[in-house]
Structures are given as C-alpha cells and as structure tokens.
Length: 331
Image (cartoon, rainbow, N blue to C red; front, side):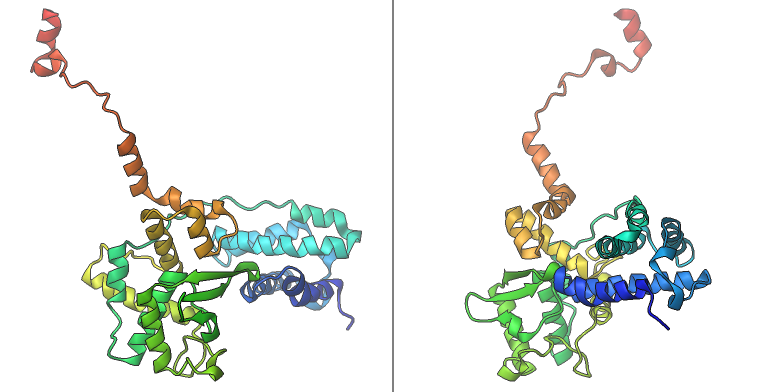
C-alpha cells in the first residue's frame, strides 16, 4: 500500500526535523511520538485506519475531539492535554511549509488555544527537610551509598541522567549538563558533594577511562536507572523520612521537588536570580522568577522591613466602655 502524506510528513518530522533542525532532546521527541500514538488510536476508534489516514482527514474539529477524548475518556489532566496540543501545533507548523496546499486547514488547527488550568503550587522541601531525606539511605551498603549520591546530586544539579565523562572532580569541580534544546551548561559542585561522588565512582570503578560513557547511576543489571526507577528511590526514602517528621516532607514529592528546593534555598541565601537561572539551565530569567514569586517568607520579610505603624495607639473612648449606649448618651 502506498504511504499516505500523513505518514510521510510525520516520519520526517519525528525522525529528522526535530532532532536535526530544531535540536530537540530525545525526551521531547519521545513525548511528541506518544502524542501521535494516542492520536492514531483515537482516529482508529473513529473507524479511520492509520493506513488510510491523510492530512486532509485531520481537521480542527477532529483535533478538538481528540483533546476532549484525552480528558474525558483517558482521564488526562489539562496540563497533559495542553502538552499534546503543543506537539500537534509543532507538527502542523512544520507541515504548512512542506505541504502548503492545505494551508487553510492547518491554520485552523493552529488556532486551537491551550486550555486554561489552575497552576499547582510549587512543591519544595525546607533545608531541614532535605537534610532529613538525605539521612535515610543506609551508607553501610553500596546501594545506600548510590542512593545518597543520586539524591544529593539531584538536589545540587537537578539532573539524574549522567555519565562519568560529564563529571570533573578536579578543581574547579563541575558537572557539564545538557538540557532542553541540547543547551549545555556548567554547574559547580561543592566540596562535600565532590567527596561523596568521588567515593561512589571509586566504589563502582567509574573513574576508569573505559567507563566514560557508562551510566553514572544504574540498576542491578547495570542498565541506566529509568525515570520511574529514580522516582521509586526518591519516594522510598521520602516515606521513611515522613515517618520521622511528617511536617518536613510533603505528601506529594517528585524529582522536580528537589530541583525546586535547591532554587528556593539559593534564593533564600540571597543568590542573584541570574546565577540561579544559569544553574537551572533556564533560557529566560522570567522562568526563574517563579521562585521569587513563590517565596512567601521573603515576601513577608520585605513587607516587615517596609512596614510603618500607622494604627492609632490610643483606644477610642467607647472601646474602653462596657456599654456603647452609655457612651453615646454622654457624648
């Protein structure tokens, strides 16, 4: 069967355009792929087989139906719905230049707006909370030392997918990270973190030249820890820490919570937002400003510094009287 124009452009979009022209990360490409896997499943439920699915059959109405289906049938959140729509927008932005014959319908699809949703409050741990969390791994075992190194490195750098050749232990000790859009940044490490990481790498022979491209953190099969595996480790120790002090460990915690925690602690220590932006790998300072907006303690301190007592110190005469009516009569 002859390939359809949809399969032709989708293959080129995922296989060539995103990686080579846009510089998209593997995680972004995977997320976009999953969007179209879901979309194809939706279209097949509507009796349109993928072998016959063409660009001309994909209309604004069909895309909106798909987004509603995600929410109502698949029980996806609005954030997920918006992420799927963003992937569809990106694909059709590419298509309009490759296949201008359907430009009008493409522009109709691009006109679909993201759905407004309530932003969840930022979840982060206090310094005492981080300290309690990092006390939970059993450092008498190799697995415990691995988990402690992983969690502390996630807190310090916000990254978990590393290889030994990304680490520089000599002074100045740094980690070279590649984030969204394949943008590289250098994150400095403090002495305690360097000592912990060096001991871990020595234990696992990761300082050898041949190990440069090995995963820095791996499972029993020496395979790179997956996102789900890392999250499992975090939740395990968070549950233990919560038993010791539930006030310090929030009920909902994720790998991003450690990243948010580091940013908030840097802000509380008076570190300039520009430096925090560079450490986190944000493109714009506006992204980093969410931490300044979320820091209610800083806001309270700023208000207290600017506070001028304008309230009257003298109590009105009628307040000193037990009987307001008597005061009014004597006025």
